[in-house]
Image 1 (cartoon, rainbow over the protein chains, first blue to last red):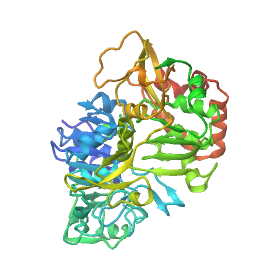
Image 2: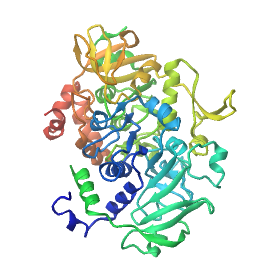
Image 3: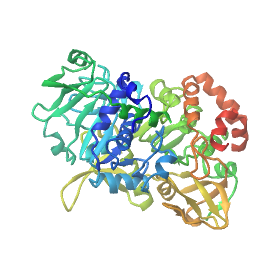
Image 4: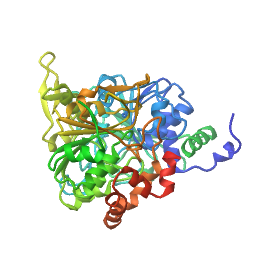
Length: 257
Length: 288
């Protein structure tokens, strides 16, 4: 049952909320999901508390099957361990659980992404004298290697969706459709990029991400303009379904508590 | 064999200028108190090893203790950047910091190899990334059985591994639980180890996912209540998340940083004094 005020909440929502809700809808029930820090964790937990209660969330801190009742600010908060089915050591989470191919979906953020879903989280500018030193790889390179598929979420602007990455931290589709096979990367790689403006899906034939959906109130031209490369647009661009009252109240309850 | 000692005596005895030191902890059980003691004792030219260097490494770098950092993710989790680390990398302040960076899976494999007494670890990773180009400690090896090409990374063998645990028993065995990260591997791969514990108990209770390190693989144990603060010890304290956001503007301004370190670390003699020096609101969240 909807909470009081949930219905009227549908009228107003932020573009970040739309992005989180759209990302959450990508996770189907029963999926095993390796959750990156930040927005991916919010989206994955929104899915778990709404449409996909049996999604299994795995955190790189070693928590398997965490069911937090509030949004943890880090990937190692106590609530993730206390609510987990199992907590394992970090070498084990990467070796036995991720590298072995047990994870269906990797959920990643990015500072920069290119048209082939390659990701930079290392530096802006030259590596040896960077303009901005970013946190670095974390778990992302091997999440991008070994998960069945990868979903990327980030805010849409030309500095984030770029023509050329300053540094390839994690490999999407490399330079050509055969790159993953040639490099020995077992997963299918990034299939979806969800931003605060719309949804891009990987098209293997053209070997790049194509705009397939815009969020309510966003024009295709806005998305093209906010993209650092010449964005391909699908013949038919759908409009993302606006966040429902249930989705919004769950998100706000979860993130706010 | 483990000896009970004070943290300051353990640091004075075991950590030397120029050492390779791993203060491990994955969000949980981060040995903040040990980092502060290293700063108080003015260690220099350290090679700092850590998968997830956070505020305590920011402080060690900003105070000029580090020559090099080996790591896989350097940030202030949930709050922003490590500005002292960035200042060192972007502007060589207070001096140039050499960096050697990996992915988490690569660092974990390096610790495992160190703990196993093997020369290197292997993983399916790094292929196609620029990390493989800029980090000399990433190599390749062909599986002799399947022909698969895999990444190889050299074992980590720190001079000293430092961790926090919840408990030690009277014989010096150590027990930790909750998120145990790579702490067991940090101790077993290091030549010497220091363990900070919340308390000493007569005997351990069984714990889900508990890890026990026998006394004979540990050099020094110091009882330091809330030693991980602002990180936490599961079943003893909660993570002081507000400290991480509080740190952001202090870290951003080198002057504010030096003043803060002076007041809260250099001017205090131990971890109890450090906690005492903090604004009450910051500490209450954890201990109140």
